Amino acid sequence: MTAVFQVDHLKKSFGGLDVTRDVSLSLKKGDRVALIGPNGAGKTTFVNLVTGHLRPNSGRVLMGGEDISAFNPMRRVRAGLVRSFQVTRLFADMTPEQHVALAILQREGKSGRIAGSFRAMPEVMHETYAILETLNLATLATAPVSEIAYGQQRLLEIALAMALRPQVLLLDEPAAGVPHSDTFLIESALAQLPNDLAVLMIEHDMDLVFRFAKRVIVLAAGEIIFDGSPREVTKDARVREAYLGSYAGAVNS
Amino acid sequence: MTISNTSATPIRPLAGVGNNWLRDLAGIAIILAAAVAGYFLFPNNLALLTRMIAIMLFVLSLDLVTGYCGVATLGHAALFGSGAYAAGIAAAHFGITEPLTMVAIGALGGAIAGLVSGVVILRGHGLAQLVLSIAIIHLFHEAANKASAYTGGSDGLAGISPEPILGLFAFDLWGRTAYVFGIILLVVIFFLLRILVRSPFGMLCRGIRQDPVRVSAMGASVKSTLLKMYVISGLVAGVGGGFNAVSTQVVGLDSLSFTNSAEALVMLVLGGTGTLYGALIGTIVFIGVEDLVSAANPFHWLTIVGALLIAVVLFAPKGLYGTAAAIIERYRKDGR
Image (cartoon, rainbow over the protein chains, first blue to last red):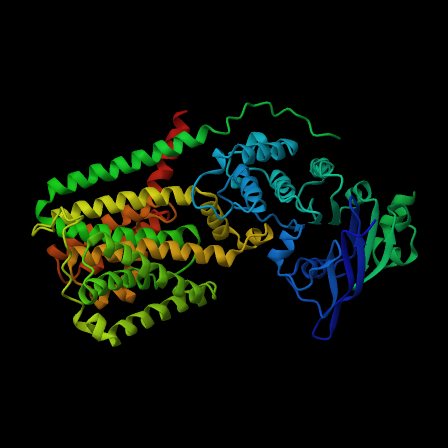
């Protein structure tokens, strides 16, 4: 199967500091991949390079074989490459219903309409509520986002990503800021993502990583030092050395 | 772990649509009632009320970019003044004196000015944006001053004598026709703007005000959305300017001034941003107080307006309308 998403020899340096050194990876439809790495490994830079917020010094980003390296962030989203944010970025005085509807309208090319309301568009309303119900947010549909709990705001981030119907989804620490006891909510939301969607998740919570990902990529000092199954990652000597430390021992025991 | 479906609360997705229309109709009914009251209570002050209407349209247009999109501007009079000059020049130099046509030309002039200043102002953010907006209004002002063959320069543009509206309603000495014409324009524009701000485009603009990064992560273009709103804002400001030219029959350089821009912003903050209602209330209060206080104390009226503004910013930061709406909302919740 051809790669739906591919990164070719991506390099980026800030001044003399090489933050991303020759990173290549590819995702197929339905992939569930976790990208992990110690602080300063270059994960955030990698996300910014892929989403078009930073320009690489060299290398290419491809979606379904098409080179999107020259696309600005907006066009990359339209090409099917969607990201979520590590810290929720939502519209404080708007409701979950409005958020999701806006994302759907944008996807459908209807967000520029200067008359009419999404509430009067049955197909938009139907899809909005289908997504909100999938993520158990329907009861909060009309409450301002500023009044709902942070964990639910994280779910709404995922709802927005789903509403855009991406082919590739970059999840930037979906469980960040959520109490450990509530990560199962995020986890079950992630389980609802479409099967054919390729997901690349950046995450620190190792329990979540090991349960979600079928494949783990480890980034350290701007390089991919491991790309394989979650089972093997804890046994890899380089990964242990660079990152996992005591956790590797804990998993093996 | 699957998601439990305990959220069985019935949702009525369409419940809000009727409410919104009802609220808008109530708003328009209040505007019309206030208009009728103004007509009978201040029969000798219709010129002032008519000026208020023109400024209301101007402040509404400012609310579109500042209140809904979060663009900081002190140069919005460029849009209003361009509308006024476009209508005035059409009448004085090209003999286009039909009032509705003049207002339409004003709208076009305002839209073009909106496009030009939008392109410039939207290049900056925050403080840079504010400075660009100030530069814009000074450039427009100076351009109008230099092009005195068309604009009359610092003497102002006179010789505007509009025909009767639709050939039926002549402008009278007491300003009754102008007043009624203005109210009709205001109600129509206000109604259209209520539709606009509730539309998908209006939601997108509100989104941009709160988090442009999120909006672009949805695949929407922040810049072209804002530019579109700037052109729409120019249309509205241009209608206000064009109407001002029709009703006062002169256009002065002050319509294209920094002061005019700043005053509009003060009126908007006074009434409350991002509601459209706030724009109307702010204008009424500002011009009303200005008129009352300047009659009572012609030397220190600005001091009093300043004190009023400080009081509002300190004690009612959402503006008069925004604060009143918040209080009513809280009262309603408690009552339930």
